[in-house]
Image (tube, rainbow, N blue to C red; front, top):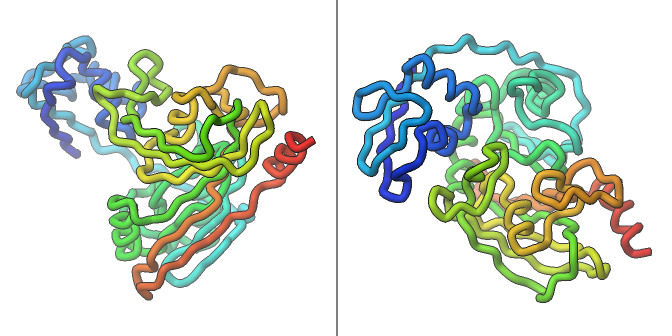
Amino acid sequence: MEQLTFMIEEQEAGIRIDRVLTDKCEDYSRSYLQKLLKDQQVSVNKNPVKANYKVQAGDTVHVTLPDMEEPNIRPQEIPLDILYEDDYLLVVNKPKDMVVHPSAGHMEGTLVNAVLAHCQGNLSGINGVLRPGIVHRIDKDTTGALLICKDDTTHRALAEQLKVHSIKRRYHAVAYGNFSDEEGTVEGPIGRHPIDRKKMAINYKNGKEAVTHYRVLERFGNATYIECRLETGRTHQIRVHMASIGHPLLGDEIYGSGRNPYHLQGQALHAMVLGFIHPHTGKYMEFEAPLPDYFVKLLNKLRK
């Protein structure tokens, strides 16, 4: 049984406890957190509370997480596009429509299932049985370079690099509209959308710092090919930031307008470049994931 404890800050005062939990406990589904509230596993100042309780500054929240049966994640022989591999880590080029790690409704066919088979189970265990070896994630419909660790020492070192923003991550994307500047920076804290809890949004009250730098690679009039450099790595960061300045990504069904003239399956976003210092050699390494076929075809259509 695990206990989570945190204190309510002044800017969170007046928010319902169920929404606070959703923001604080991102690794757990909303339905699971609602069940904890119903089962009186959430207390404020040692008193069980209901979902509609509005927190106050200085409140101490305790969340009891009952022991759960560890799911049996099955290794699966799924082809991997490996950009680099050694005894400590590997860099893979994730395809479109592949979930990174198992979750409710996606227990098979994930990148973790494939990596478990490829590495014969030799992956770091820091993130538990659902996310072995996973240092960072990208969305199901986002393609590109992803880092996997084979042991805990390597994982800790790379997680620290990620924490201090020293891992180089450059994404290529196609966004709606014609950017007014050749390059720029979008700054805005990202947190849960205040109404639609399945979405992220720029949230000055409860969001975490997020910074995205972009530059124009090619203009098509009604769309622009851009490169985005992440200074931070929040959930849906590029998608939220580009939508916030009036340039949602083509194919983005969540943050876009719903238009999809190019019949894309999800957003046009690719994790192109990944660079980091190897924890064991001390040398800087950089890898580039080639653009997937759908992305190349999209650019060719736009050029015509």
